[in-house]
Image (cartoon, rainbow, N blue to C red; front, top):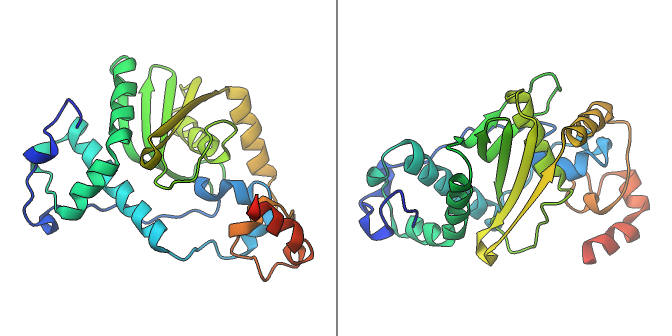
Length: 247
């Protein structure tokens, strides 16, 4: 495991109920996780933004909880008191490439500020907020790291979700001028890093501000929209949407 703390065998495996992992259950209308949908179709925001929590989503939530708690204790707390049950031990093994990436990144920087599961509430952009998995700040440089727990390849380049997380970080820490963004997918041992500019974040902010619920635009983003099946624009373009889903 990480060089800063004990290995799995060193961790206390007593009753895990004494070490619960909790995160605020806060979802904003314009949240980064669904940015690829509402940025491309403001009309999708007219439908409830709740999604059914299937097995993959529940597993992703659990892995995020374990990851943030582990990193928080490694860098800000006492890892020796981190209680591990059989499921958590399996999760820690899955997450090992993620921990390794975070550690390497921290070591590459100059003693950065470290934030894990950092909640960024809405500021001057209404209904735009979210939680960043990892944010490292080194002077005017921000490094956003996003954990993905699925098997489907996710690119860090031109990633609207990552750009939204980075904009939220910029809103919270106005001194930031340089930005790096990383995707880490531990299940496939994959990671990728991309940089963006202040100009790109300014363009994104303008896109968000001009985003209108009156504009309905069909596309690949319709596949997981809560309005699919009820949206007349999507219904008229169903064949095109299904072709996106198969590609």
